[in-house]
Image 1 (cartoon, chains in turn purple, orange):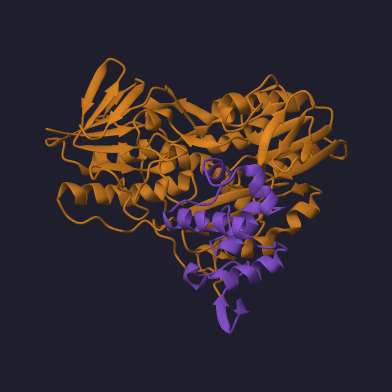
Image 2: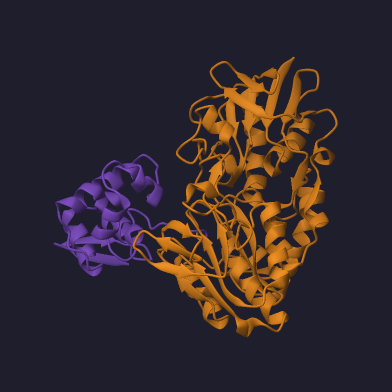
Length: 102
Length: 410
């Protein structure tokens, strides 16, 4: 799958997540957020940056991780990404979807 | 004389004791394995115990039976690992080691969620990841007259991530057989985005839940268990009521990892994904559920890891570079109820797909497809576990690294 944003072609996995975080920028985030019906604000980008840094250091996004983040609490996390914050926040941040084995 | 110490005599530790007992020279190396518990449980059997498919005796044996003669077996509590001093403190004894293998596993931590281990624990709130939980649940199901059963897991990672799905499928089968399926409302509650989360599996298997009339609640990050009103609550304020809650609590590494300051948030030890050497200490290796590698926490994974780790221990002793070989290979039978099952074979990179296993075309097992043979495979696995797997005997045609042969790949 592919996504076209501002003249660039972004590669997506079969489930619509970014295949490569290095292709992520704010335009990509806005385009995906629109599909997820989330209007991005500075508060969102603060969380996105934290999620991306965690991912780069090998930590998967989890509710437990949010709890200990010091950036945001869980209620605020839900308020920013209502109706499935883990799957929405990861998709907008350009990191893999939280998965099980099937 | 040098010392190799294995902590934990579960699936992974026992396999390593058996492998290394054959490989290390008895003149140069003393192998010691430590575990405080006497009983080895066949953990996959905990899925069948609640439904009276297995008896209590079928899922437990003496640990000692599986530790080879020539390996020093100490049944004591491990107080602390001191990796900077190459020492392990046990109750009233200190062990020195040249090489340490940590195989202390993972366990449920219901105390992580408010109210989970509350007044109704093992009364109408059950786990099935412990022998005690599975037996208490079996006793409850024997007398259950009907109502709402909710099957739930708290957060990833958990041991055998498909087990809660298998549980709800088997519950459908069990209540149907008892002639009371119409009296039981089954709901599956997951913190993830769906009951299935990988594209091929979602496409191939989503029909199962509809066919079995199982409701699904997704994206449910549990905040608490409300024992007064018999419901679970999530951070968004959603409520799911139950008469019986079957939950998989948070899974964490052993407390000794925390006491030793060697783990992450969940007490799992940061470990090289491909060599299984610990990130922090070059003479400490980690196998099975105790590590933080992003493979499934499952016996098959430990089995494949054991082959790579055995080679790497020998390479380490010889001062040679380690093999970056382990690929996250897992191979799991999944019960779908009514005498059928699935088989999946995958690794870090390759998601489960359809195909044949272990041989292309002829199989005889089918991947990602419900068949009776896959169910028989799961049932036969208990014998393989006790008689081959723990003893480190290779399983014919099943290699440590995942094979692409027979798989339908794009």
